[in-house]
Amino acid sequence: MKENSWELQDYLAVAHGYGISPFFNLFVSADDKNSSKQVICFDQSGTTFSDYTAYSGNDTEKFHAAFVKYFTDIVTLLGGDPTEASTAAQEVWALEKEISAIQMRPENRTDPIAMYHKMPLTEMQVLLKSWLDVPEYVNTLFGETISTKEEVIVYAQDFMEKLGGKEPTQDVIREALWDTLKSGQVVPGYGHAVLR
Image (tube, rainbow, N blue to C red; front, side, top):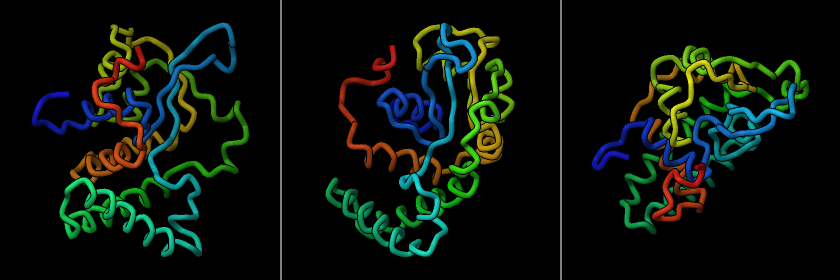
């Protein structure tokens, strides 16, 4: 990661290297249609609460209040200003609510054949549009040059297309930072080499 820089692509590489999955999951697994082959997979991710009803159900206000309090408390304990932390928490909550709205619902994720979308990295780039250089990103994570023709599996194609329509903003970076803080998995000195 570049010093004094908050480029989203750099941050995501570090976060995914720590095993944190802001915005989307990226992992290696056996190909669902050819178990003798390992393949890079992309799937949806990106919210604190895995149950989408936390963002749109009857208990939304309860989850919202707990989220803002927890976020503010953590940032304050780390030396941050409580007022700024509370404002940032509200912005992150709004972003998570937007992400939750575009995620595939669990009832639509039951058919593995319908969710299976195999494509070259170049097609994955088209899904995410210009805010992430997918081939460069994958090369950074794995520490080697992977062909743009390399086939990957995308499990939540509609989510990726909708996520690709969101240009990264300061709020996006705050969301990514929040995912790092709340994970409790940040171990200084380990970087993205964990995946190598």
